[in-house]
Image (cartoon, rainbow, N blue to C red; front, top):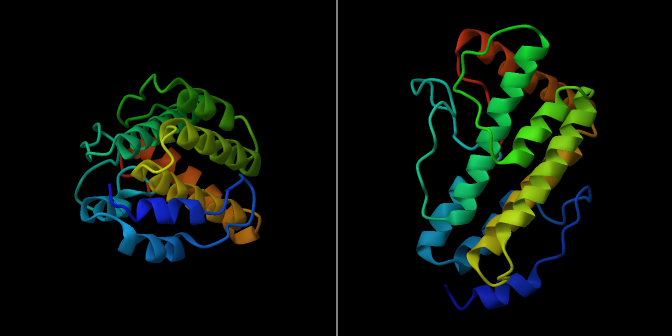
Length: 200
């Protein structure tokens, strides 16, 4: 780990779920990248709300377990988000009496599964808030207790992405985007097409 981590981490503002993000994810990356080891800097590009970026010819997203990245935090996060999305498709399809043709939804992590089961019974906005809060809790659990390890920086970026997304959903545009997300999940469950995923 680079010695600059001991300089960067103490400068980070404490983040609270629901607050206005102090900086954008892009601004934070611009600050952090020059201070990171080369390998850790490369991993920053993998931090996203989408556990597997969509490629037109790759088939349904999340159909197979994701390749390991070398970061336990990122791997754990992508596994959690993949389970959330596949279970959202499963429970949404069941609610509408339709059969999902996506990959089998994992039974763990259990908090991702339970969040998906509850969210489909909420209003779109309440469901989004529930999902983002569960994401926040998962990030804190995965982060660990070593404040000066790279996971603190990875978690901080991911939290900024969630805060930015949360702020967007307080506008009509964000609410419309949420409805489009769940429409795409439902359509993919019925057609086998790749879901559109969420913005990184």
